[in-house]
Image (cartoon, rainbow, N blue to C red; front, top):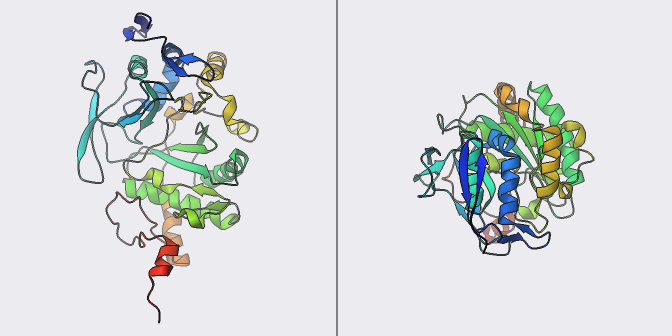
Length: 339
């Protein structure tokens, strides 16, 4: 292995161990390539992570080796990387790192962190989301183009509610639309807002969009994964490298780019080039803040007028008031007693 190297990142010196270790065999990217990528897009990556409790998805031996999610802050972190205590649905707590400068992103990359999973909260208010995250997830038989179609209609719905969304690729086939919101609502309310938006999309185009939690009911449609807004659920942050053979990244997009974008075109190399030429195309996002009042009125209207309310939570969450049974529909039919 080559000797460790040191990088200067915004006034900090970050040591990179084993710089020649191969992380992505197909394109031949090394650990140092990954670390230099994060140094190159550091301000943009930090914008998505700043002051957010963040889980690290680590691949210390590259994408062909074992990986793990690290929620608790590494014990050897420098004292200039702060933490915040967050509570899980189980009632347990953990202190997670909260990046506040680009060097923190690079330091984590040296640990083998490819993908950053920040909470939609800031460390000052860990129980009140300040970012709505709408995950448009292509199901088998659908692809990015289907997600893009749903995203463009979602943009119109957000405008009707007095809000603006910021689209990005997931790094896979899907799209994420992020909405900065005032930190005045709970996780439950923010999740209800996503459910309301998902139902509005589904009602308009039921053959192409679904909010069905159970995979057997989704069909060849775009799933609005509302549970990504539940506590302790996260999405890959903007600029995060994904553990895929070609080292694709989660790419911030302008709305006019959404229809013709191709997720596979945004890689560790091409994103550096794009960032150098155009900077962070979501930089203005930090200057915006919206309210959920209108969308939460939609949720209440759905309950009142359509008789639909709470949807199933992930299995590790406590049972919510009004939540339907967490039983797969086909199993529920098998278990139903004969009359």
